[in-house]
Image (cartoon, rainbow, N blue to C red; front, side):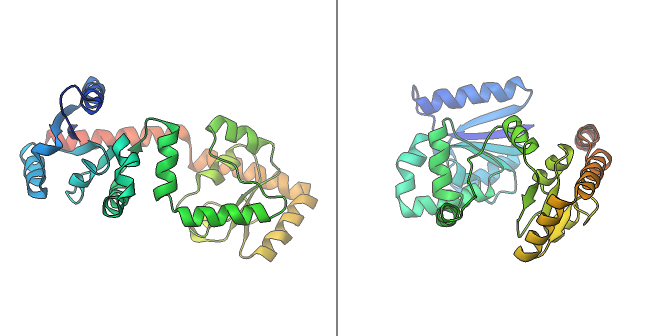
Length: 266
């Protein structure tokens, strides 16, 4: 893949050293990585011309504001790497803060070098008002605990010790949490929305509820009916095996990438 990598490249600075190291990583994987100083491509028209002239397919930027903003709106996918200036200085300037938020919305991925940088970014952009509201509500609710993110193996271990997994989302595409629970043989209760209903068949692979009262009713039923629990668990496991096989998914993606390579050769 032909990549554009934007960074501030003043000699003998940490940015320049980091950018060169990342470029070497990418080229070691077989990509062509054109490392450019942000000062050399300061306007949108210059970026557009360079992308077209070099037939670039994707891009990467070191620094959300200094580099990331230059990649918006050009029709190629890009990712960003947070820099210290982003979170120590630019974040405090309202106009730059807003720009950086828009860049994050468009970026395919974002890399932070430390947990503290990641947490600062999440507090600033993952919706802090809503986060505070959720934490306050949980704190006032007996029997409910809010846990931080955890490694997948730890999460799966916790799920196996649960009686059921609840998905109360009001919007879902395809819930990985539901599929993981089914594969781990844990019963699922999910809000009856299109995304969940596409995966959970009521009373077959799980239980669907439409309001809090129905959730309570179904949860009590699940607790008191071991036969229903056993049937749901078995059907859920089989559903994942038939329709969400890891190996089938892997083969599918590999075959799809091969079709892209064929198109390039033509």
